[in-house]
Amino acid sequence: MNKMLNVEKLFSTVISLCYVAAGKIESHFELYCFLWDIAVGSLLVEEAGGKCSSLNKEMIDYSKIDKQIIIATNGQIHNGFEEIINLN
Image (cartoon, rainbow, N blue to C red; front, side, top):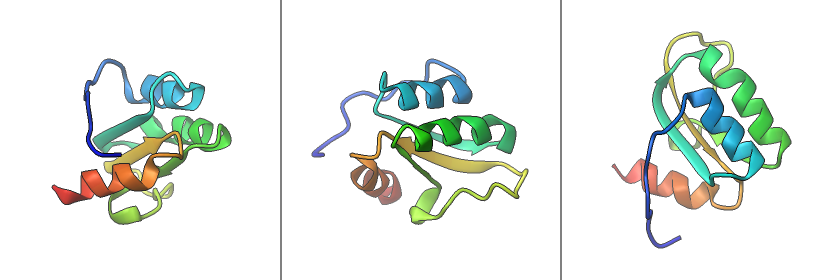
C-alpha cells in the first residue's frame, strides 16, 4: 500500500464495520468510540476474516466502556493501514 486514496465518514461506526465485514469498503478508522459502537461490528469483521485493533497494534479492550480507537480492515491491508495511522 503506497498511499491512501480516499477517506470519508459516511455512516455510523456500526454500519461502517458491517461494510468492512461485507467487503464493501476496505477499512474503517475512528477515534473515540464507545464499546457499544464497536463490539458487534468488530466481531462481524473478525468472523468475516478481517482484523480489528486499536492504535500501536494493541487489541481492543472489550472490558473498557470508555472511548477508544478502532482500526478495522479486510485483513489484507491491516499492517500497512496501521503503519499509516500510527505515523501521525
